[in-house]
Image (cartoon, rainbow, N blue to C red; front, side, top):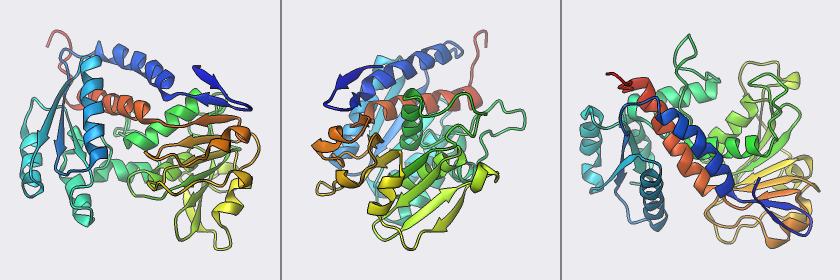
Length: 316
């Protein structure tokens, strides 16, 4: 584990986690007889989207993947996505959102064919995520693709050994209470569902309310359920949580350190610093960013799609 020592906590850098995952990707690449092609579509002027595209290009090049960035007007994007769906040379498609910044973006997510959806945003994958269905087939050979950032958070928690490998697969967060600050449809809400489906009790905090995601007492239910926590606030969730995960895209927002449980694990997935500097005096583990892990997860999802739908095994 690559650590930077703080006054009273360990600061875990995402680069170390990403390197371990890259080794797994190298092993899976050997099962293919071609270098998978990922096509990215950029239809906005968002600097964060541009940076993500640049990271994607660099990571693909460093790991032996092909990447093409196609910059198109947003009015043409739908047609270009359909063309990429039909192109047998394309193994995966990623769209850098927001495009329209409204429900039309959700429509665009459904245009990408499930066989090329490396972001896990198509209906099939989203349905499986919330229903706690982990495979596409009854033989459990084809994994269901998960959204990149939520899966990156899970891989971080696995690296930190917060997931208990002694427990059965699917129950390995049993006994943990997690606060997730962000309930966006792309990251926060699916992350809360994934953590709850793995056995945690999750407080999902939005700007207006708090919801509880869980599989019931003793994790008896097959999939998570959601209940309203009408009397709870962020300040009342934090002292109960041994893991705090924040992704608020606002420069002014800071998680109030004084309410955080002493010894908690704190993870930031926002492009902004949601935790103030004094978090190192309260947390036992602090992960300030997960961007490098997210990019590697994107490649992992690309490999999963290529192996499922366009394997071209050696000797093909």
